[in-house]
Length: 371
Image (cartoon, rainbow, N blue to C red; front, side, top):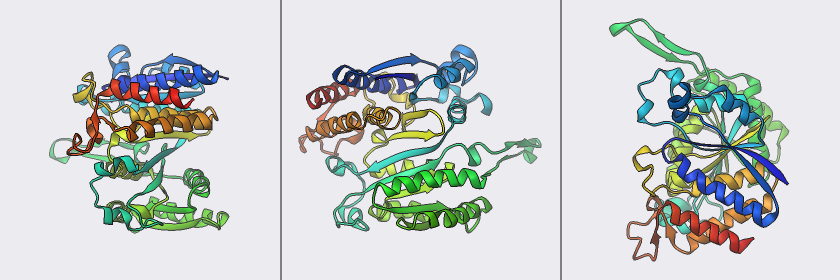
């Protein structure tokens, strides 16, 4: 089978970690007789430097012509002084809207190999888990193309009277479609769905809850619960094992999934898939981390796991996706750690602290053994 993949390394550590995701896909292609044709494109800060805008038209058109988009990271302090419409992050919003992706899937699980990297105590991790063991396995489904990031925004007045505003706006149809993605995911997991909102304060959240209460009738076998976002943030560090699938708005999902990444060991471990009516976007949830760019420090595992999600959701290659995930687990079993997931006394724990390239090579070796 042949697949055309738009490749957007982006800024900071993006190109470094994405390079290993590409090598993983190339290994899959060689071993399983698939062809992955990569189409390099630019967006974010790199595009601003070359084209004067964060999302050139040719980038979006190229992405639309591909089967999926593999993305590294965009942004950095170099472009922080630019006006909002020219900031690198605007490229992400444009790509999501242009490719028709509206649901961001962010799995967050505490792998047994990384329990020492989790800041929570074992007794906390055991709370809410079905078997009482110190672990959790959740999926955060974040609405991606609505809400405050896409609402009306601007500034008014001047001097001490200057004000700024950003508008949270959702339609019932936007909410319904992401809810159905979340319910479908929950049906294939532990059949528990938690709708997160701020319905005690926000009118947009009240619409979320009303819509969820209506849609839940179509999924009687799924246990639906509701939490305010502040309570959910607390519950994530009090008893993360209680969660299966969380579905929420754009801004709440952005924040909660970053919190979940910390208790999973590191933001460098979390992959994501953005899906919807068009092409998929696959990217690690970490940022561009410009301070460590080019130093062979960045953790490539989130990008590699994002390539596994690409194989699953855009290529329907579930067996190959599982092989990539198992290769990552095997490397962790062998004690390989980048600095962000190392224990405080990694050497005493038998861990091997390695850099980006060493970790990437270890995954490729494990993958070759599995295929």
